[in-house]
Length: 349
Image (tube, rainbow, N blue to C red; front, side, top):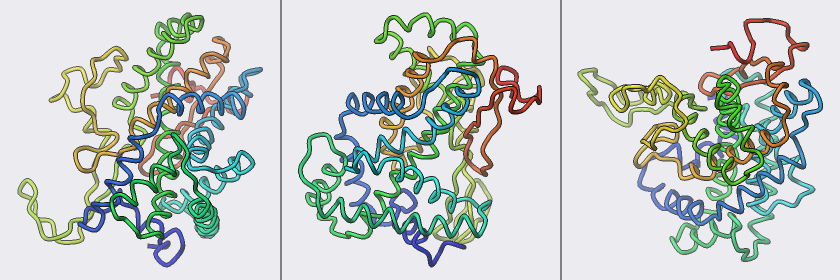
């Protein structure tokens, strides 16, 4: 790989989400416990705050499109950065470094992007080192929970811990951005639901619950991460097909979510659907421990967008997608930015 000997390669090699070996059992347990200890009500409130302060402006369709794009890619990262102890003056820079870092994970990256990603990884690791060294017990702070659980579990690999903190932010960046964008897209294509949620703006608690239900269903229906890759550890036979050690396997998460074996109407978006298992956050031992965090952040960004967006501006937006081989992250534009009728938000497929 192009990143193998770079700081980005070091981060990638230490990520527990990419490994199933015995040595990663303890780190996985640390992250699961730490993320499970975070106060989700607090996380939601901070996501709403960051949406209000940094992104959502709706004075015109152009401003709305720009602010939605900004909210998707910025609010999740700075919310997590705050939970890790970064100061307010650092939040925007952390978001920029993370945007540069994640570009290295795509085969579409240019040499310039790979170099920028390497620099960003170095900066993030350096800043996180300072936070870990200066950490003080703080109720609800994610970094405190990670360090406390690392000590309790006997995970003393400092560099691996730092790399996985970068990994938490990188997962937040793309996956949560896609979840926010795809939810807004689904909402915009459902006139009845759109009207219902806009009417609920005067009852914030009711609106919040309805948006949470919608976000969860969109995560199943239009998975932000459509596929992931794994590699065979040793020669294997799967459904009659021999696979040699090292063979790559492409796992189609988005397709698995639409399997009619689980639900005969799996190809329909039903925001009132009873909760059921889906694979957007993995499954079993591979399940992402940040699921609840991502859903809460996305729901609160969407809720804030509904609270601050004129209903008639939605029909003035177009949609495209960021270039990616595995993620579905919408890019919104005002009609005057791109007159192509095939990209109309309400008509795109």
